[in-house]
Length: 150
Image (cartoon, rainbow, N blue to C red; front, top):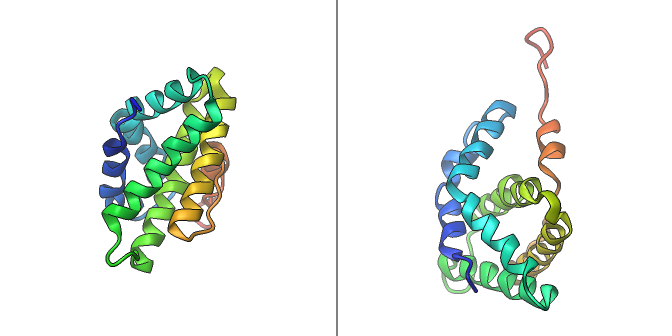
């Protein structure tokens, strides 16, 4: 595969900064930071699947590689501590999936295939039950202040 899995593992290394004091403004600026830092990886991921003869198999292979790499890196004796796993899940839900779907453009069907496949493999390998939503939906979910009050 021509996708550098190490790039997405770096995203997880930055998790404390991305999840600290998470509100609408910080979420928007963090997402912009992700674009600069991890955009090439996401573009390569979409391109790799989009140009493949068997898009489903390629997406599954990449999803398996990603979930396995995360499990290998963060597990001790085959298990990931629950607090760490929650942070990893949040990174996927708040940053990986929304950003992947946001940058897809004309390749939206490919990004959806990748997101669905990664979600399936992530849940299977890491024993989770996460889902995903587009960036706009997540950003809109943050409470807005009206006259300084929630």
